[in-house]
Length: 177
Length: 213
Image (cartoon, rainbow over all chains, first blue to last red; front, side, top):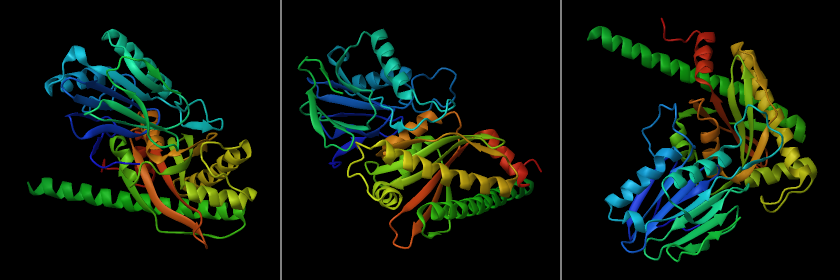
């Protein structure tokens, strides 16, 4: 997989850039990579979100860790880098359950992917934002990359190669399994 | 100031003793696990001297050089005096070699596993983790109870990220860097121990290494 000239967000990180390099997340399991892009300023960014909710948590040093903090933090960083708030378009990838073989036990929290997706939708709705494209849920890991020149989003699912998901800004809703 | 530096040195020495105690526990645990694996596979397994690496969940994905590499992880909840999570990790080629020994054939792609394939790895992981834990109990006197495991076969980064989220309330992750391998070096594995904070304190107490003194 091509990883040259790309800013990959690790767990809880947010990366924002203008034109170059590409931004993305590799190795998304239950985590969600939220990407946002303004095609006019060519400013875009990504947050690698780990958990749905920061309520009652003490480890708030990384704003990208929790969905409720990650979205406003991502938007603020993008605006500070020159993006127009109203021109931002959003794409989200991840929220899978990779622990799919066997029974496990009730004391494992194996629905984090689902809860992350729910938190994504609730928090986006509260901000009045709709997703332009999504690859959410399922049982396969995903990786994703956003090209800041073209607005193209690429997604790899399971052991497959990166494929074009959409071009942000075309306004056509894309959903892949 | 002198008093202060003495106490700092004492704390560091204690940390060093704790780390060597952890390494010793990992050594005994891995030895037991290798013997269990040998009896399942009908061949001998060797082990390297384990190195325990404490790591925070944010840096979890740094445990591997290539987060895109496919791994199989048999993951389970552990309860008892010592509680938390535990996992046995194998890279995909190792897992394929294990299947060859267990059922005489191995799948080509991790995307489509038959029930026989995944359940045989779950069962072996269960035995390996269980024998690691029973060695742990013998050494520390702390009771452990293994719960039914669950298996992920996917990119190592995605599995570690999912564990970081799943186990984030436990807060302490110990990666046991060890190798257990057969003569042909076809199967290699490592362990992940994720004890709860109170379990770690209990462990220091049981080993006489608590800092209260």
